[in-house]
Image (cartoon, rainbow, N blue to C red):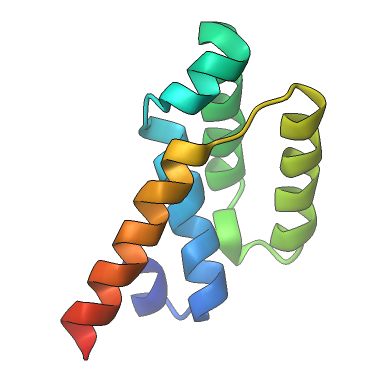
Length: 97
């Protein structure tokens, strides 16, 4: 909601939310695939993305894609964060309809 209130489009707001979740969630899928170092790497990458301006950056999609490629190279998959994002999108939709 905060990203939408700041004028981001829905897709950008969802990207922003995903990175917020990755940055703070102790995602067991990330931990399983990359151990604690992999989890911390992903959290740091997400935190850095947000610190650089997040989805409001002019090149946010390119930055997110680069992080995605780095995750793939390390066999990291933030599945828990994706599940949380899906639930948040559902709650946002239910609460605004």
